[in-house]
Length: 267
Image 1 (cartoon, one colour):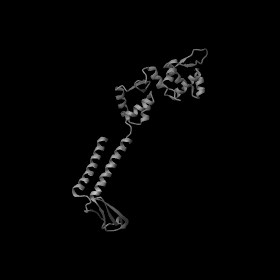
Image 2 (cartoon, rainbow, N blue to C red):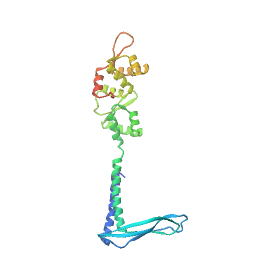
Image 3 (cartoon, helix red, strand yellow):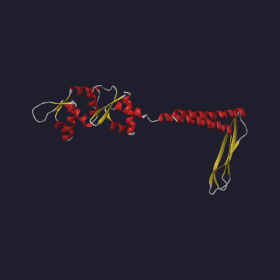
Image 4 (cartoon, helix red, strand yellow):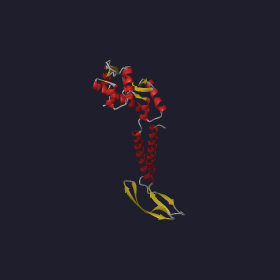
């Protein structure tokens, strides 16, 4: 049963109870002196049982409505009977009203506390992290991979999300982020922390060698070589031809503009 139907069922039940109580008052009269007894028999108990006793009921009348004040004390006895005096109709009205309030408030609270739908969470994360790859998105959401792929397939089918493969990774973007494949690839590459550091150094220094990057960033030369080669392959960096063994690299003009336009470098 959906939450909306649950809320309606609770409200109908509470209103029915409240309505039947009011109808009883109308049919049988207000301020009726007939009262019911609630009796609890605790005879033949094998151990002491706390019961209500020394009951002092003080009926008070307010315009055809009865209220009963109860003063009692808890005693431990091994046998006896507990008696509580109550006005049935008054108690029914109070119970119906209380259930009506509790039912409404509890259902409204559940509505506000309901977790965000998985589809909306997927869209929020992709919107805030363009170029995020599938595994990273899966870790961020923490749902079943099958459920995630189901929503992604539907979102792609509806044209809301687009994806692009870079190697073995599938990167995700909101539709309309960019129509340029180079920009999409740069966006996915720039999500790597090491690539971020390399790009920052290239922006700050104009041109720089791999050896200088290794020393400045305190990273192994093989790691720098791997990422620089990938950036050169995707035309993000270009090699400057100079004499000597070390060939510096510079940032491509389109990459410099894209990094600034799309805010791809984390501050």
